[in-house]
Length: 119
Image (cartoon, rainbow, N blue to C red; front, top):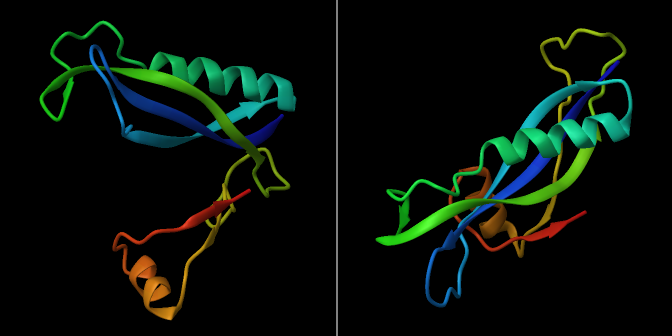
């Protein structure tokens, strides 16, 4: 059995009317599975379980919404040689491109900046 980091995309969708922007969440779940296929299926099941389709009180910007499962964006095998996760194990990673040192510094500080998200 291996450990995987599953990147699952959920998004808010308005129940009625047009929508130009989508609030998107990328949740990363740790999955313990025997194969890539099993890990993917378990990640999909986990992501779908987080959806909120029938809660009439859910709103985004004051508009009735639902939280929708978008998909499993990527599945990464965690860098571990053991069955047990340990302190310091690389669980996941992302590649980003920013324009210039100022945006890099802002990103490092946790400030919002435009990025190119590369796979």
